[in-house]
Amino acid sequence: MIICHFDCHWSYCQKKMDKKTVAKRAREIESKEQLLWLLNQMKHDDMADVDGNTNFHPFTMRHINYYCNPNNAFHRYKHFEIKKKTGGTRLITSPRNQSFMLILRYVNDILKALYTPSEFAMGFAEGRSVVTNASIHIGQNYIFNIDLKDFFSSIEQARVWKRLQLEPIGLKRPLASIIAGLCSMKVKDEEGKARYILPQGAPTSPIITNMICDTLDRRLAGLAKRFGLRYSRYADDISFSSMHNVYHAGGEFRTELIRIIESQGFKINTAKTRLQKVGGHQEVTGIVVSDKLNVTQRYVRDIRNILYIWDRYGYNTAFNKFYPKYRVEKGHVKKGDPDMVNVLDGKLLYLKMVKGEDDNTYRRLRCKFEKLAKKLQDKGNTTNRGVAFIETIPVLDFEKRNNTTINITTSKPEEVLWKKYCIENGEYLDGNLLIPHRYASFSLGGMAQLASVNKTLTSEEEKKKEILSISHCRDEKGKFFWLIHRSDKVMVPEKPHVDIDDLNNELDYLLIE
Image 1 (tube, rainbow, N blue to C red):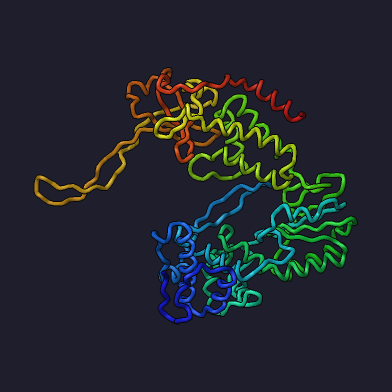
Image 2: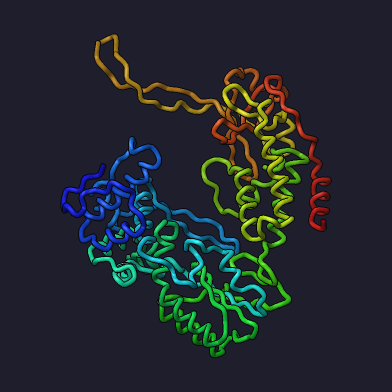
């Protein structure tokens, strides 16, 4: 139980707080102590759902004091770039550690309890998505899309602080200051001047952008009504549509549109401004809207091709075709290999969301996927430790197929702290136990890969590639990994040899199917 040490009104909550209670508590907060109590109560409620609070560790005032100051940059956010589908890169900023991430997550829950986005905001709002956004613009002769330049970085801390105090949020000034600090980060402009902006990648940034854009949405919706248009906004992606064309450069609509957007502190990214006419390809937030909601042909084709290769030539070959393309589309890959099964499952769920559960294309692809995924659970290829051998390929064949070289090496000794009694002098000493580690390395899709080496493999055997195989395995937790071992130790039926020319011809046939 969380005990509050300042006001009896804030003593503790025996029941899990609902959104209405969270909102009420938040509007009453006047100090860091009260915010700390609320965050810990929310964390307490979450932990109770998971493990009965046995592992509950409350946030401290030290957390609040440190993280609410954007000048404390190092332990707050980390930065990385991802490739944009349209070219170039996008800077993503995410919380550096779990404590800060959790604080922002609960702050986000507080903001969601206080605020509901406008009816025109389709992104980051419960019950709304890219699908609901696109559905507004189905069957229109003209679709006009614009993009707001540097959307997140255009919103500064002072603006957030002011908005949090206004209705319907209505936070008191001290809490608004704390949350604005928590949700902002320090950057330097081209002139070296410090700015405090919303980080793109923080869990709190999306809902705050919707708050900031309330006035923008209201004025653009009014502009749309004046000209007989449909209007929606998904984050920084703004769409208008109509049966008539009012979108001429320099015309009354475009002139007023620019004036409204700039009056709200934003700028239009002219490079992404486009007018899509009936009879041509029409998309809104990546979804085709010509006469009904649909995904692009390429989206379906990519899923179908990977499933076909997986079925015909095996998981490894499919993964090797999937992985390089995934890296290009994603722009970055987190530690370890992506799980192709999970990625395909996600793509199919998106296809279902757009086309519907009863769509023939979705049902056919889902059925194929389920059959292939089920084969990965074959207990006949699973060890007593729960390791499943999906496919096994001789090392020499693997190298040839993937134009790579597998090298088995022993790492430099890793230093592991240990304690021992020194018999010589009877003193209790700290020392370093040196533990070498053997592993294999190779490249796949232009990305360095590591493989485990079976412990029974001797140093002499590891030099004889003709007797070795590499297996794609899955552990009992579902994590995929590579393993080097003697060919006679693991026997998994191998898929047919892949002829690249034949494979490409078959894929070309699929395109016109």
